[in-house]
Image (tube, rainbow, N blue to C red; front, side, top):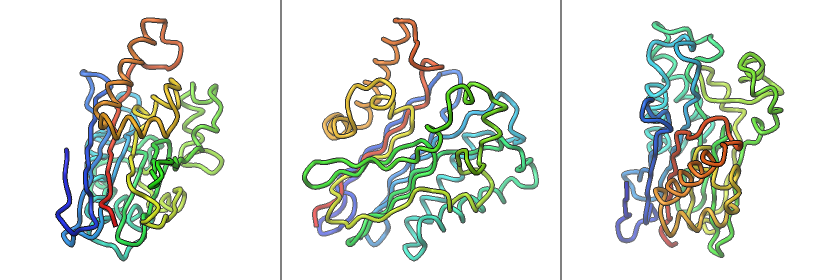
Length: 275
């Protein structure tokens, strides 16, 4: 998707979203959107990475793609239409709305009830707000070309030997001392990494699920600034093609770097209109 803001607005000058499923045999559980409010004075980017449970073991009759579409739609609507609500309040309200949509049919107390990582970014003529929950990434590019990565690193702090065990991981899921995702509890919004940057200090931004951020944090093909350069020159689809090429080469070499060949991979990129 590519959009351009109208003349004289402070919205999106260019936006582009690309996604690839990890396997043709499974639905893509990622979700992303970029939107301009009707006023044109600002914009919002939403990105989710659904958490894949063991088959049929999440207490929900709908599935993760249903959940990410519901939650993503609510986040996009609220972040674009309610500038008076801080992003944590928007996440809390969207989680509550999504939970109510399947509370009567599903076991929302299940530890693996459908859940997702979240990246939210919203801007107007004065500031850029951000919210990151779990292991998706937000990149903010300054006018001088420097790039700042906003990350929630709590999952990275969990030892690999624990992550290899589903039961051990479940004991840390949405628990203090572990890591947090957007599931059915609205209070998790208070656990997100949040902040505000002056609008003049951001000329573009990008959101990446961990399937896309592999280019940096798994394969080490470049740093965050170089990753942003790929996004600017080749768009999100170009970055995803590069990731798939690295994954394929690694698989042919024995696939020692990760536990599955491909993951759902999504990237959203937005250039902001000059002030």
